[in-house]
Image 1 (tube, rainbow, N blue to C red):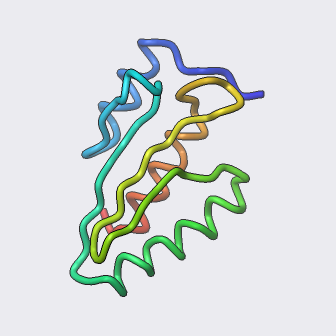
Image 2: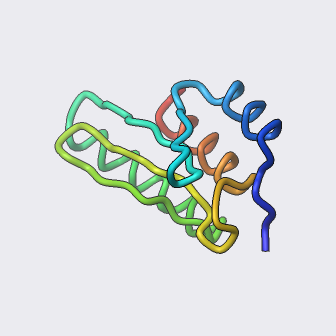
Length: 97
């Protein structure tokens, strides 16, 4: 099992992730991605799904038209881990940022 990030590691990771915020209640990170239209949003989700499947680490997310809301946490560890940070970076890259 992957270990939860401690407070120092979490702060450091969030400093490197643009636009991600900490959800203290869930010990997770969240971000809202906004695209030009539904097709771009769905394309982002498809690209990210392939990465998540390879990582065997899947996001909690929702999509409404051009907006994708994401929450990342590692359920097995009971909170935020390096796996979440790695997936967040991959999502940022998929979104072009």
